[in-house]
Length: 207
Image (cartoon, rainbow, N blue to C red; front, side):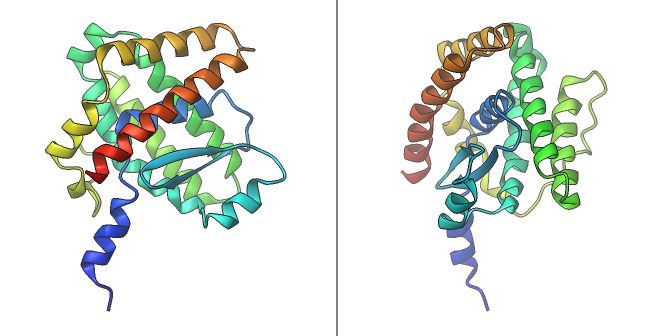
């Protein structure tokens, strides 16, 4: 019989900062189809296409089921950053989430032979669409066994990482990248900025 405390400790490693998940998906949309993601120690990693991708995933025991850990963060990001008040102050925030949807679409192509995974990704896509659109359906998101871990205190603590200036910088970078399709350097800069955020997230969760 499994120790419930042990299960909680394991799940704790997969807690993710909601807005970071959206930004990582947006970054993924700017990369070659075939890139995959992994979740480890509270960080979403983007694994580039290449001969070493399979080896790295095997070495670190990455699995496509890591995608399940995006479910709660995506909903929480939508609730906190796509509400009317926030969008009114930051109208271009919607563009970030639209890019995240494109990242999900890229993953759908990557996992096109895995029906359950593509269905899951399509559900995530619809969660974002549900908040972007005018007809919000509160029943679309159903709480699961991980939802309770994302309590108000934790979510507030994670959101505190994101100052108005940091959010503005990310939105400006996304807008610039969208306009300059060949801007691989800008994508890399955004990725490197997220490394800093990842460190702060890890500190917040480990404290």
